Length: 377
Image 1 (tube, rainbow, N blue to C red):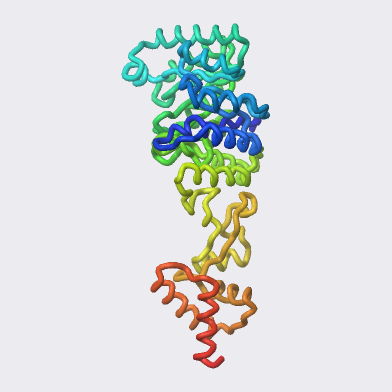
Image 2: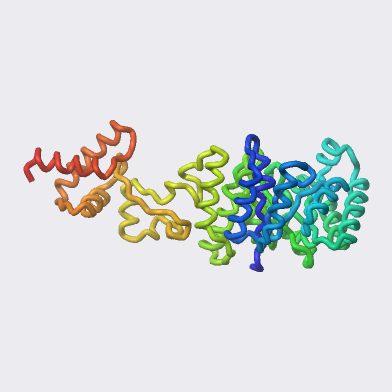
């Protein structure tokens, strides 16, 4: 696998999530953190929006980050000049690729799209900036249309084509098939995958695209984005790093801290079982699982918790087994025989059902002490 370019769109597509607004200072802070995490490209926003948005992008562009700062634009001169006049050196141009978007959104034909794109790209060539072209709704476009757009982009000088699954209709098998065809045809332009999560397959589709030869990944921290969101960068990167041992340089511990910050800013708590970043993903309660973890964590963990700044916890509750009770009590310096473990386990399970939750260490210790007094052991 060649180097995978990480294009982070948290500040653009992520902020387009209904109800999410980042202040200028928040956007700048997030951009700085993304730079530290290892994003290669930061899609900072849409300059033509003007005002607060344009000023924030300008400030981000002037931070001197290692990451390329990218402005997102339609194929319109007003968009281009809004990006150029704040000094952006990397510009993304998005055009409708599907007949659906051409007919029902832009109300233009493909010839108009091609002519507009060529005109825009030639302006950018005169300005000497680097640019990418994105086909909005690529997954619902005719293959011949996508190929023609990429040919134009490549011939004019684009360094990258973004294949967008705009409404999240792809599955991994179809994604692999589509991207494999493009990467086989085009060797000297980067193919980027940009997926949405409408059917819960954004990360899986991104993995499939990379395995098919895509060498740029566009996604967001925690998968925030319009409707059901984008591909969660951490999920795709963690998969390749931990499962396929194909290292993508991206600091997942710092990314987790950023995810927590974004959850706080947006007032949208992170689900406790969120893949990679969820608080509870290394918590174990079920007896069979806990027994396996105690013998060797690899039995029920795909990778160690410290890789993502997490902590392993063995919980005591309704589903616990004897091994977990013994372990928990031994950590408290309390010894117990097998017969008494079974009796205490029955009490623990009953209490857990009554409280409808796992028990705290203090509650487990209290049950032990009460049992010790009552049974006289």
